[in-house]
Amino acid sequence: MNPLTSGKPVLVFDGDCSFCRLWIDRWRQLTDDRIQYAPFQEVAGQFPEILRETFALAVQLILPDGKVFSAAHAVFHTLALVPGLAWMLWLYQHLPGFAFITEFFYRFVARHRNPLYRLTRILWGKHFERPSFSLATWLFLRLLGVTYFFAFLSLATQVSGLIGGKGILPAAQFLAMVSSRVGPERYWLFPTLAWLSSSDAAFHVISVGGVIGSLLLIFDIAPALVLSLLWMLYLSLVTVGQDFLSFQWDNLLLEAGFLALFIAPWHLWPLGRSKVPPPRIARWMLWFLLFRLMFSSGVVKLTSGDTTWRNLTALDYHYYTQPLPTSIAWYVHLAPPWFHHGSVVFVLFIELAVPFLIFAPRLWRFAGGGILILLQLLIALTGNYAFFNLLAIALCVLLFDDAALSRFFPRVVADRMRVATNHSRRFSVRRWVTVPILLVIFAAGLLQLADLFAVQWLPPPAFQFLAELEPVRVVNGYGLFAVMTTSRPEIIIEGSNDGNTWREYEFKFKPGDLRRAPRWVAPLQPRLDWQMWFAALGDYRSSPWFSRLLLRLLEGSPPVLALFERNPFPQSPPRYVRALIYDYQFTTWSERRVQGEWWQRRLLGGYFPAVTLNRSENGETH
Image (cartoon, rainbow, N blue to C red):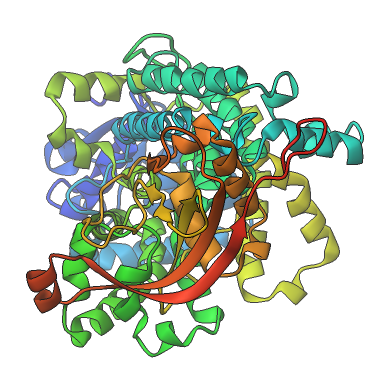
């Protein structure tokens, strides 16, 4: 096309300058077909009034009426044609000193184009055009669906034993207690569908409904609508789950699931096309969530005062004292001390320094994402942390743009997903609703970070603000393994019919049988096994649910017994139950070779005295 006859402004640049070509490719995306771009080496002869030396020094914007703008002035006139960026030209024309500063900066860049080009390639790589994240968003939502699937599937098989009518902590009793103490505000303070029904059937409907909804999300069917449903269902279970749904990854799933609502496309069928892309602030907020998760985990290790992190010995104990180790943890535990001490440095570096790469230029952000994914894979190899590692990896995926991910997708899928997301800045009701909500959440997230360092600096309104958001769990505090346990007390529950012969209740995944290898269960979570680990760190008075567990064993509650590997009293419940506390440690190479045992244990004493059922005249047991 002839620039003189196109009827459009023409931006003439140095076609031999690699740095210039990078920026021109980016501006082409922004301006679409509003401007024509041409290298002066090809079109300089059509503009004899402009010297070739002038073209070589700076870009020239030539308007159809013959007006010419140069250097920074040309840049701002070009960007003024992009919806939403006209304010830059206004600043150039009206703000005192702005034009002088930007022209000075432009001249500096023009004189150092070669080194700046090399620096740009180091930071951004060969793709300097405005990034698109449609593939990353698509993949993140699929992984989020997988996470929801395992979370709901795990609960579907345990919910009756945990919070059902014959479970350890019946939700119906919990809600009745709340109703007796809290007024109408209880529906905000305890948001759950269980207010409609807290029967076992209702919890199964919620759990199975979550499994079905997660499958719909995995297959990209009505993602925005399905995400709303999944978030509401999971919040309903977490609200009444009490001790059994109080883990950090439960809150992390709710926070990530809520933020995902703002990036999910509003289509019904897979790979549907969205005319208006989600606001970039929604992706930034998910980046900010990943930053808070990882950085907080590093900060609490240093601010807790725990000496094992400070003297680099934390991982000397971690592999056998963690709640549910895998069989690989046994082998890693036997590594030499220098390996464990170096691993602590590695972990602290990743959690304290690498999160800042989340907001770095493109290639550095990729490096940060890769390192964070590596950490999650290493953690998953040695410990069963439910769906936490899967969810953290899903958040890391959002750090990679389409140019990086497209090589892993079939070309047809990649091309279609790129079409589905554009950079339109047109008015969108969704954008005007999204931005204020996410700014509120961003402010709350900043307060959570501030709380890590200096609680006394936060004014009372800040705590009130966080308290108001706490029931819906859209902003949460994080920080894993702030204090490392240096021993492994393990509770063994026993039953007896005569008070002399005692038989152990074997759990499905927590250590018990010394010859049984540590098992793999993640991304599912045996929640009773996990709570037994916490209960062993104190006495039974600090875990009121434990006495309820023993009561259910004496009653022979089928849903509670289903939480165990086997029932040593299959015919009828035992007359007595008790709990002992043991110290467990991994065996050594030689001990396992001779004895075939993965664990060794030493009796520490009683944890809960032997008890039996007392039946009142009305038939109640206690």
